[in-house]
Length: 188
Image (tube, rainbow, N blue to C red; front, side):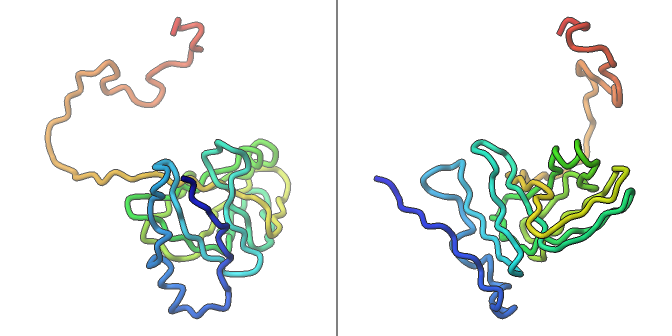
């Protein structure tokens, strides 16, 4: 038996702020029962230019995030670029804001705090902290895909004090400890 799914309706931007605070009280913040690899996540549009995140290709890990306002990043400059979206992440998850490889490769534009973490309890507007490492000004227009959003489970850690066993194959070797030779040269 298959379940019919309907496309989510865009949020009404004229809703009162009290209602927008209730965004996580609906049934959309849950795991889908038909496929444990699917997660229903509610997004609220804050303006007409906001676009719901979407996958560019089947099997992609990240949903594309689009800018909702125009701005220009001069070389060396950074800015928090609005997406015009709020999100309701289900309990036990986080969202990571990651760079788009094409923007980095072609223009030197990337996410400054990559990956940016969005905690499950955050209800403010999603913004992407972009930096221009390129040599020319970079112009952003509404609707331009500027980053990727990856939703992932979070393990809760209970820190305890104790002795750390350093007897591993790596030991205390840190930065550069695996060397610079290629995998082919090292026989791995």
